[in-house]
Image 1 (cartoon, rainbow, N blue to C red):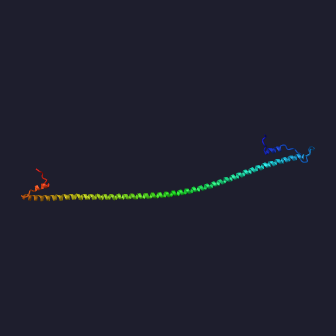
Image 2: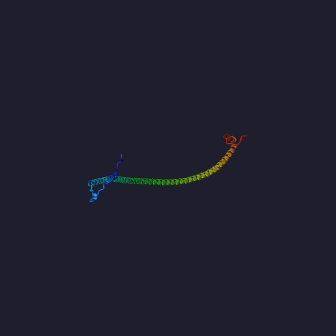
Image 3: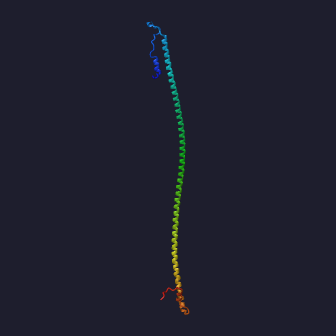
Length: 209
């Protein structure tokens, strides 16, 4: 089947072989003007022009529809871009707010930690000074104790020498008394010798023969 012709091809067919009409008042060769044929040709020409106008109207209508569609699409895109911009601004504002809150929280935490560190340093310094003071006091107490021990040792040694002297003096006096008593016992014939009495009590250090 033959392909359908376009509007231009259809109009060109209709107007491809227009009849040759003599001009008005031209009676060359004695021919008369064929008004009917000219009228038919003009009708066909009007039909073609109307068809072309219809095609142009359809094209214009299609272009307007396309233009309206494009304008609508552009408006939708503009609105979408505006909505996206609004969302971006909202998100940016929210993120900025969260960032500020986090920054403030971090700053507060840092301040608290710095204060705790300063307090800990001060406490460590105070404890260190206290330890040094206690160490000094302990060393002083130990020094005093050493001096006291040395003094007591010296006194004990002195007392020991004095006691030894007193004991020696007492023994000397006792020896003298024992000797006097021995002599008196020896002169008394009714009593046993003193040496024998001392032997009974184990006070005589002389070896047995």
